[in-house]
Length: 536
Image (cartoon, rainbow, N blue to C red; front, top):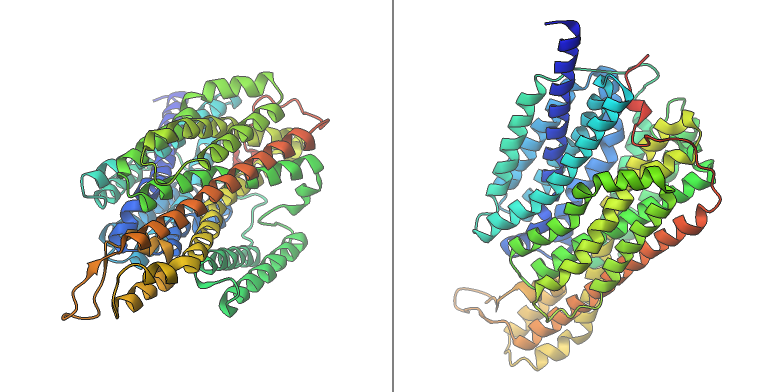
């Protein structure tokens, strides 16, 4: 085999391995989207416990993806990519056998650590072996397409298996895909870029602990109460740690996150819009899943179908978005995308929770999907075009982190808001509802305890009021308590949709007016991250 043929074969094998790895990561990440209702009924979770199923995956993914990128640059990417797939196997196996929601969280954390490797390393490997700028652009476009495919098929697969009564099998499918990824990666070319790279341990530790503390406080405070000492303490600790992270990054020679780039006004505006807009996107996705699954108890398969309308456009419109970015200012593409996400959230906020017609979500979810397709392809373009070319790689890497941070915030913050609001509404009327329910003591005390401890989600999902012992059989949950819980949740998540929509509208306004007059560099291939290029 000639050297040229061997190089071509290595390029092809690496592209295949990288694309399958990101497909695996996205399937694992998106799987709970259609399963929230099923998991809520399986484990009888409270609102905060259900939120942690998604957050447990997203937090380690966001917190560690920059560090895993540095590790790959220093020590080689091929084995690290296989290690990411192995972590996905381990996490999915734990999730498959989970008997409690707490065990499921552990599985999600482990799989999230795997995703923190798979996302950046798969992209780095593609860029490193590409023989030309054009080949690299094509490889990254294919990589992004496989990411969208994973996001589309995962909820559909999970929903179908849940509808067949076996949601756990979906995690076996993830395990099988991970094994295939490990085998395929064996034929890929290895690469590294150690020059100028260094692990920033103090920065990583303070960033990780700070984000975890704040997200923990936001999630648990929604049910425990934000005035509790442990919640206040977690918020304070998180802010102190993130402050320490900023100080460390400003003083270190090789920072984990280059904060100096935010001195560029245009880039800072794009950064803020990215976090807010991606928060709005995933907050809308998550709220739809909770509305149909955990609140209305509709089929997980229906939710999976709706995710096709969300993620399908991101795959189908790749050529169109690329054309728009090349021929129009990405500022306008980004603004229209955020506006469509805003339309989706505001539209959903008008729905009645007692209306079981799930097809009414098709229109707003399609708007959400088209908006996401426009924004996710334009964020990096705008960010890179607003900084000097020498900072393009840094701008791209930082923007990826901010985008994923917005994704992580979406379910956590919107659920914290909605759960807190629903439980507050429930608490205001539960005493009267129990008094009018016809329940007798001690069932009245038990129902009150369920409302106080589990909140509106628990009352809405429990078919009976359990007895206190074997001599005291359960009785049906009174209808007026169910209605109160349902209305409390419906009102809360209607507001959640509205908040998400208004946040997306704010992101649209920020890009439209904040980027007015910004200088646009002549960058025609904005998706390339120069930090992923081979050394030398």
